[in-house]
Length: 426
Image (cartoon, rainbow, N blue to C red; front, side, top):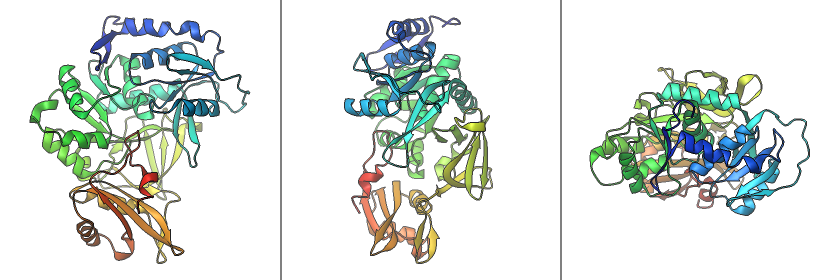
């Protein structure tokens, strides 16, 4: 704001309203009176859609030395209260009002320098809180911007949730660090995105595979997304079929991006070539060190919100001959089929590589006391065609025994396959 107070840094696409750095700063100051009663380090949860109010409150919380807990925009009010209390929030901003949640007991293990809490899926039914300090978020923003070439004069399209790790690193931090403007869209249909990208000259588009698949299927001119320089996919595995369809439709390669809430960005497909073939998730970001020992992945960087700046992931991986990381599965998910070990993700990767398959999920099931693999495949092909194509690529004992084939698989609000729903279909 001090450097370029009149620069447009945020555009509300649905309302066609622009916000300058000065206007957004003033909006954030409007929250100051509501935050004076809170002590530094207290946690404030909020549920807001992508837009100027989200940024204004987030900036106000940082100025007041409070820890922000961004909640999913689609989370019901009752769920917001439950999660906010569970994560130790002092108050909750919901539907334009602050409501007190009572005085939370002090926790000696709580990170008093925490500025933002990322919420990610835990191993059980409860959400997991990742406590981030300012230096973690800023380092992630620098790593992402440097590696992906996000510049101050770029315009980011913000359709992924701002409060998720992906949104914080790719959208929120570039704006705060260097004034990279964002075009916000809370509600939209794919056709609107094409229009907004052209109207507002969007250059960077962080997305999820399901949205990119929908855009690839739209009719129209090949140069409809001509202003875009970089298209990014994260949040769920990107299949070669989607990457190829998008490239054929718009002439743009999709860049695969791999990260986690605990570490921020990890690897990135700088050329987009790996995404076209599905061979890897790319190479480590600038400023990020990735090591693989006994196939377990450990990430070290200033962005890692863990002691000593390093974190051991639950993912298994290996390096290919190009220095790119190939994901092999997750710990604790291996299956014993006929006395032989197989990981569901290994089969999942092969399924995603098949022509005409836009997504797939494989998981471990049980039948008559024995392990078996179950698979859901998003494709226009029949089960017989998929089984035949898989059988020539994998040994018989690795083939799934239960199947669900559909043109569209169920997805969560984050755009990921809804595995809980899929397990009920086979």
